[in-house]
Image 1 (cartoon, helix red, strand yellow):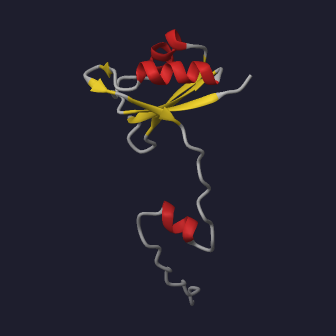
Image 2 (image 1 turned 60 degrees about the vertical axis):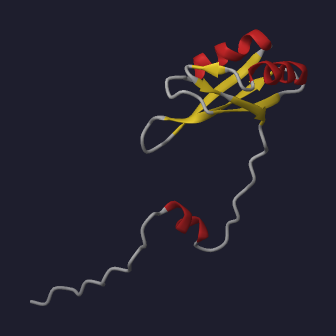
Length: 113
């Protein structure tokens, strides 16, 4: 059994994992549905992924769901691309994660008595 993952974009913020799975279940077996949540705000980033059991299920779901209106938003469904690994060299990883510049603090001198 081959698994096929779909990207689903332009979702309404009220759609959660369960509701996303319900939307796709009439078109085939849904193995997993996940709405991506912003870590800082805790709100939906308005896109998610649906994992279908077979390529045929995924093709049917994509054909049926792409462009339909859900909660006044026209959703987009396409095959999910494989995630590319980010290049890691030196401090690049640190620079990508921190929105501010680290400044070396002045070293403290021991107290003199």
